[in-house]
Image (cartoon, rainbow, N blue to C red; front, side):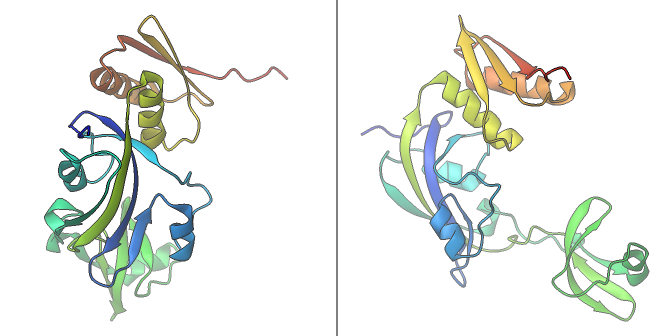
Length: 222
């Protein structure tokens, strides 16, 4: 039976939940997402292809998958250090109530707010000040993943397409490969400063491809 190694592109299905309380917070299964009120119509549910070692899933989960066999389902427990990290006290800040008032926001416990580009959760709102936690909501929590590895992906077109779908959050990507040269056609052009690091990374993790270029669909003339 084939075993998984770092650098492999693997098709996986998984569900993640908090160890305490058994609360599901992430899943690739549409039915599970609906049952636990996680469903998002913009998400393309079903198996996903990830490249192990590229942190497209939790690093701790990647490490646990190395050496595992295909076709089997595994239950993997991760401590905070291997999951979403420990809570950092420095990321819990006291924010003046007036800052939110200027934005027309009425802060109350449980409200998610954006302060200087950082997302945080209001913990308390009393005495003209608000205590806001900017830690990841899952920081400091033990998590449990049920994960199954269906197959190792060997097709280079699928490797590139899958990597970009996750990286750019797109549902459909057209990839053509001819003589070790790949062309990625997108509906909208992406900035050069994003293209270059993506090219470099793809050529690194898909060494059979020696050149890659991005192109955008031409808009019809009015």
